[in-house]
Image (cartoon, rainbow, N blue to C red; front, side, top):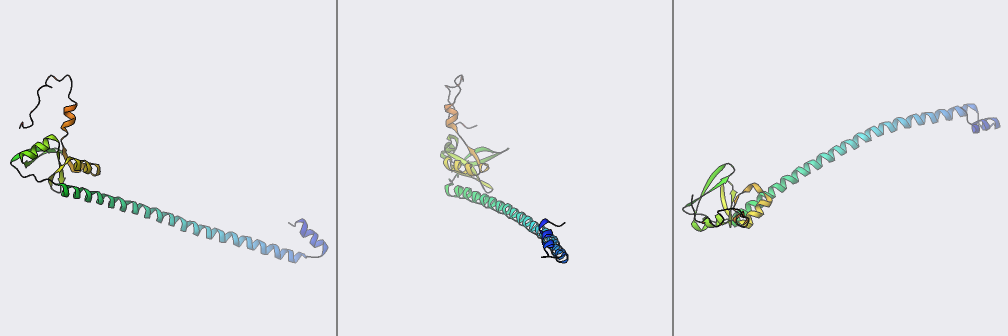
Length: 180
């Protein structure tokens, strides 16, 4: 496979058949070696890039998990601090019953605190193994961060304002001091 230029050089006597074969052989060897190097380099490069991508993905997942755990710890610390700082003392002789999930729990409180709990001015939140009384605005802040920590918020204003118009007992108000 001689091209037109090679044939002209041969006819003019500027090149001979032996040199032409050597040049073709060298070019062929160079092309063959270049192809082999490229394939080896490409495979190694591809493997290295793939491993790097996997490592980056693993690192990102670990960082995401660590950040989620740190955020959760921060929320727990904020809730604990809100409860500790805003806790209301509740020693008393009147039993106040409330539901915590499926269990009915009891706190002994004073008459003043019992009235505040029933009117919705105080709320009950979990505090470790026990319960704490906290003001309702603080309970709302805690509910935004961790809804499971707030056990009871009485919202009597909404029930009184939204009373059914057809209720035949609407004129008879239930006294606040009624004990069951």
